Amino acid sequence: MSYRKPYEASESVPDSVIKDIEARFRGFQAPARPIDPTISTPDELRQFGLPPKPNSRAAPRLQKVWGRLFGRALRPQAFRVQPDLIRATQYRLFEKAEAKASFAGMNFETSSNWSGAYITANQNKRFLQVWGIWSIPGNLQLPPLAFQGPANIPYFCANWIGLDGQRRYLDSSLPQMGTVSILQPDGTTTAEAWAQWWARNSANTAPVPLGLAVVPGDTVACVLTAWNSTSVRGVMVNLSTSPPTAMPIMMDAPMVTLPDGSSVQPEIAGATAEWVVERPKVPPEPDQPPSRYNFPDYGQSGFDLCLAVEGDSVDIFSLFTGVPQDLTGARLIQMFEVLGNPTRTQYISMATKFDDLTLQTNYGSF
Image 1 (spheres, one colour):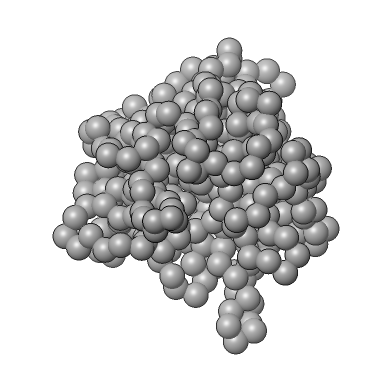
Image 2: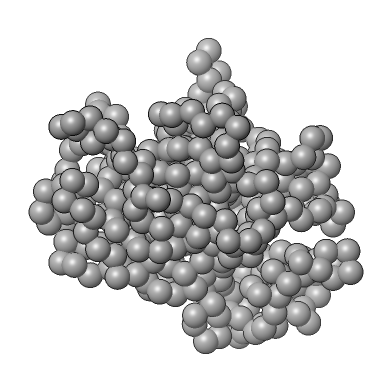
């Protein structure tokens, strides 16, 4: 694993990637004053980038989750791509690394960079919306000595929700939205909100800072809604501000290059929905593959109100007849590290399902 010098900026994101992000990520009109989504019309919600109100009779649990995010006055903000913030990111979010061990018949898997849970859509159904709430990890600590790198480097821990990204079909992709907590070299913890549409074989994958003000310990909520098979509306709400602040965005899938050299824009399969604590990776040095960044001792984290809506197709029209699914039958993901001298595997982030709506992760082993 390679390390950067203290506070050294990450490799500059190429201008071509910035231009691509500027074309695929866009914001919505921001009202002049806070609005109350509970009394807003469907057209107003759409205008400001907020998801439609669920039918309380048909989907009472979904109505509860919607109310947790949008049940009081809030202040939507206008998103804009900020190239300097993109270039300054020292973390990269990637697909789940292959498990190094098999646990046939058990309801958990292992990964070297993901910890959390995912659910799978029922046969002939597709997930088109995913919700989640979490507190941004604060007061990060150095991990045990065996997991530390050189002195004076930052450590990263990301929390996010997403759609797909579990399966290795050629154009698989993963729209996601979350926060990252950073243990700075001086021992302080900072935080940032971001969105990303990861895609395999895409050179344009990079986290896009939202510009939504967050600090460690804030409670944030997110919802991702498929507008169509290649476009997603995401909203992050900082519930710890008064009034709550919201950042709605629209993002389109990137183009990917297939092995035969052709290009394709991946579509949302809607096969899985995820709630993940991730160990990000370092932006690669020239001609070098990316490597995992150091992962801090984040203590305890997790997600609440974990719901995903499945429908007959991946588009906004299916949302109105969609059925919410919770963590019933979820597969848990446990993060591990391989140590040397002697060679051994040790878990470093463990996920536990408290109930059908709540997932907890803890730094360390069983």
